[in-house]
Image (cartoon, rainbow, N blue to C red; front, side, top):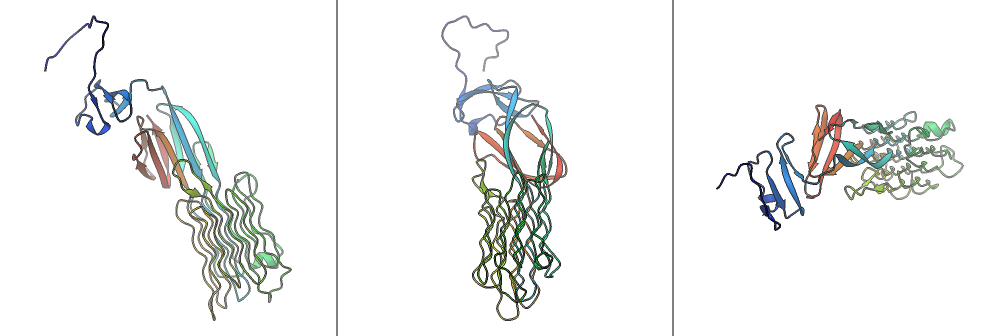
Length: 347
């Protein structure tokens, strides 16, 4: 192969570059190499400092698409034959885009799911942890109401407007669900006037896309509010947990992965524990059904942070974060962060 130095091409025709697919890139690329990528449809060059191929027309800014979901709230615990638990509220769902310069750093934290309420009339579901991406915080979902909340004429707990999370479903005794925040919806209520010896069912947790359903007397717990479909992954996130029931069929969780159903009523002397939210979907835990024994609400699903960038750029993940990289799409790289806290750098 000829080696040319300080060469001038004095012609009005063309200069043809090597042509090949992404898979046909040189195995040991060197700084400054150029070629036409027939898979992506553009001329690319090899950046040895960043150890990556970049388009020759690459913008100085990086277009970033993100999704931040807080941890789901825990479902309420059940107690005795007529005191089921409400469904946990979903974590906040926040999606958006931003343009960043190379070298920008962002801090990421993944919120944990709230614990399910223990099988006791005094234990409600726990609040989910907050997920963070830079200056954006998706607060955790509210824990669900319980039998004790109803006795005290208290609603299912809510993180309030500042949190932006879905609210927990109410307990028995006709208590309302908690109010939703800026990025969530209210939990469903228990319906009926309620005495401790009346078989009643609990409200579902609020989801990112809709309020939780109401429980019905002597029947079914309220369905969890629906989650939201992500354009990045094609999956639903942040569905509310289904409310527990004392009689009737199982309450469905919101369509959001973690928005699982409350358990069906137990037979004989046993109730059923609420179903836990799916990890990294931010859904609420299901409420426990009532039974002669004490049963627990389901844990809320942990939160998640997802970042999508053009394939020619790279995200360097710092210590403390658990992540996965999806490169199946030749146009984008998708980073999914599932646990921990730490920093990432765009380059």
